[in-house]
Length: 194
Image 1 (cartoon, rainbow, N blue to C red):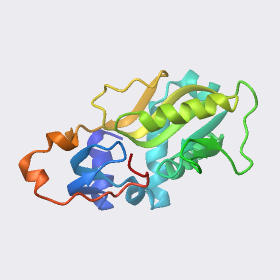
Image 2 (image 1 turned 90 degrees about the vertical axis):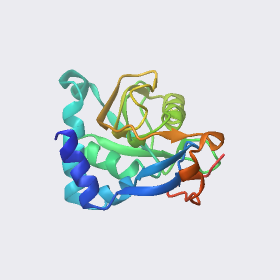
Image 3 (image 1 turned 180 degrees about the horizontal axis):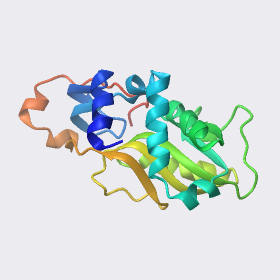
Image 4 (image 1 turned 45 degrees about the horizontal axis):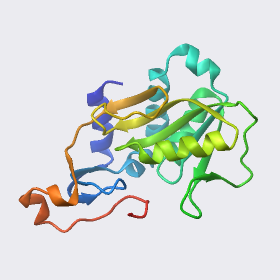
């Protein structure tokens, strides 16, 4: 899939929103990509996962033992990546504020893990998930996401493969342009704000 094809999927599912949004990172934006909407259609989610799997180098795809995604946003695309790569797909979640593996999920020591996200904006959640996976005995060998909102600036400590890079400006609370500041912010994501 080309970038225009991916954006067409977001537009077709009404997943590209405009307004004033408070992102999970704590930053503000006039645009929000509601990946849950683009992934709610199983055929579309599968197509995006196949395209994302195609971004991974062939040797890396062969080395992956498990696919893990952070709850909530990464669960659907993580599951579909598991299907695309024919690997088990699990997730980490934050029952007490920090990521951990639960629900009987476990890793064998040294399992090579692919971290799968829907959107990466700052990389904070991804780095937290990587730490939790490593603490559970896994070895995160790479990360991928449907959307990279970092402008190519994120460092996750592992190779990173996005399906598409989209650079919508984001702002700290004290940097808001007047036009954006005049609109009440809504928080469409699943993560509690700091």
